[in-house]
Amino acid sequence: MKLGQYVRLMKAMSKAHRKFTCTSCGTKTEVLGDFCMCSNCESIAHYDSVAISRKDPTLSNSLKLIGDALAAGNYEGVIAEYEKLYQYKRDPLLLYAEALAYIRYSNRTYAGISYDRPGFMEDNAAMAENAMKLASTAKALLAKSIKASRDDMAEGNSSPDSLYGLMLAQLKLGDLRGAKDSLDAMEKLNIPLVYNYAAMMLDAQKSDYRKVMAHADTILRSKNILVNAFFYAGLALFGLGSRNDAMKLFKSMSAVSESSAVPLLVSEIAERV
Image (cartoon, rainbow, N blue to C red; front, side, top):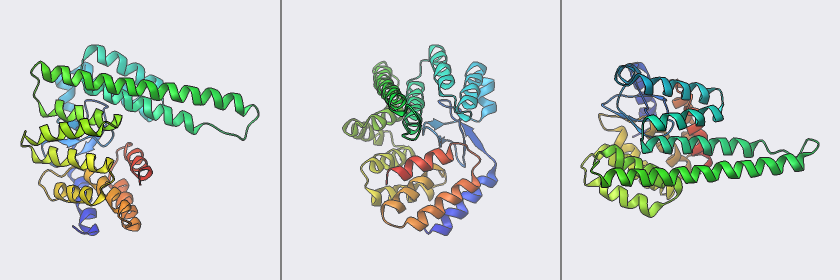
């Protein structure tokens, strides 16, 4: 598929005015089919905000508080809300999403290190130590999420969301062997779109950009287009040396999406090439 076709598809998605809300982080993502992958944490989203509010008002309110805190850059507020929400809803994906918040909090803390102000040595040392603690907590949460997912499946939870959530945490923790095992199990569920997306994530971790591009193209040719596939197509273009086309794709994506998570995902992908 050519770049112009990708851009036209993105515009079609924006005109559809249909978004699903992620029940792990509250982000709203454009959708054309029955489900989508969250543009922030990549969890599977099945419902819009109205449906979630009707089904589970407590969850809906917590997601709003998390979203507001994220938008304000208040990571301590985000983390506090996740701690409360997990006590209410023991979902492994909430642990995964909280880990992402810790990772971003750690990254922001590292970014605050400076050598241009008086007393920078003491301040920088404190910031670096805090950033390492935040990153360590994130790893512990990812490990906890993996264990919780495995425990759920051992108790009979065979939903695709559980297996997919396990793989998300494995990928973020860098456990590529475990992620490959989860992907192989996912293939047996016979849900091609979820399998292709998961395989695309794994190949992205391996920097196999030709396979990433192939998966993205397959997804974008399907009836249930997943908006994040545009980002992975951009990542593949970067990795394959087509940087100008990649930037055009990213800029077009930012222009047609209202999600505040778009710039974050673009930055994360750009840092990996």
